[in-house]
Length: 135
Image (cartoon, rainbow, N blue to C red):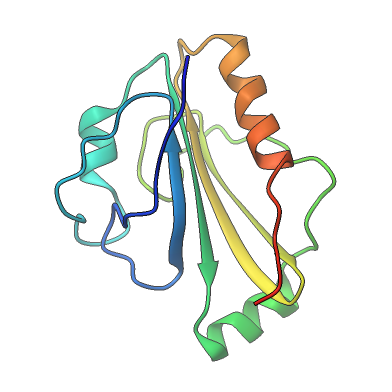
């Protein structure tokens, strides 16, 4: 199963800023949805697939608050959510926050109920391989 990546915004949120969204299925993107949910992702969701979205908090005041309250990046990311993630997708979806190199991030992810174990391993590998540079 291959991954597809876009840097386009797929919901109506301007800050945090979308860095990328990776999906195990082609994501035909027309225009961003309004609000926090991604109608594009909801409509194209596959119960055997997954997505990962990395966003960064760049607003000065919001970033400072977030940097004080979130943990440093973990060595390995835990995928233990059982609710709807920040993009309003079906379970098993979740949100992870972390800071690294003076920058603050959110990860939104979703893994379909019928996704093979290989997909869950790929999501973990993708997250653990992220490299965060300095501005």
